[in-house]
Image (tube, one colour):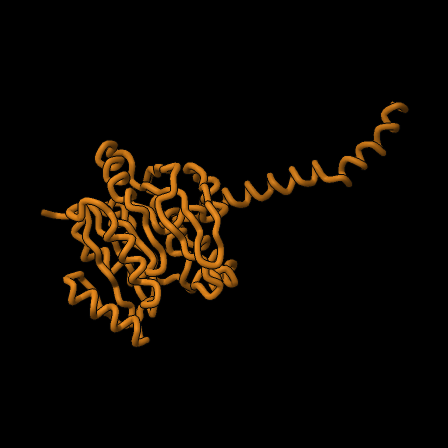
Length: 265
């Protein structure tokens, strides 16, 4: 019996967190619904390698490869996926036990839905509930508010040839992916509940990614297929700038000072 969802877990020296991630997956009911593919992206530290070996001995599949980066690791895992739906899961995060069943129900019930995503609970160095908005393409053009931990149809991944493996710096592969599939007509559905737990770490990859925000953004927006995204961003930011100017103290003071001049007209 083929699984409905393939959970893809790239892992690079994340053995200290991986077991907790795996426990969150194994707590999900109806294990026939999903398969787990762990992609060992060239890990070098002993604890990670020992844990991966233990996981393999337990019968779970581990794809071992040289270090090739996050996008390549995800793509390689998804190529082997037997599930109709894909759930990328970072090796230091956790999913909630009902995420799989809820996503399957929504995707099976409505063939027009391509992506299912939910809210997240921060843990680790920060404890905070993050409620994300319903899908809004204009908002997505200005910031990446949908985490990689979303369930989507493998067919939509095929449609855009997967994650971009040429990103100059790792970390925004998912944002680039969401924009490209949205422009291909993908429909997103927001579950207004916590679907996964996001580990906040000061030394995480995304912390380094944010330092290189403009480099990555320039790469993305120079893509021919994302030209419209650049146009939308410019319009949004110009509208925001005009709004702030109009509502600034200086602008309002200037209007007051000009009011007496109307009396002489």
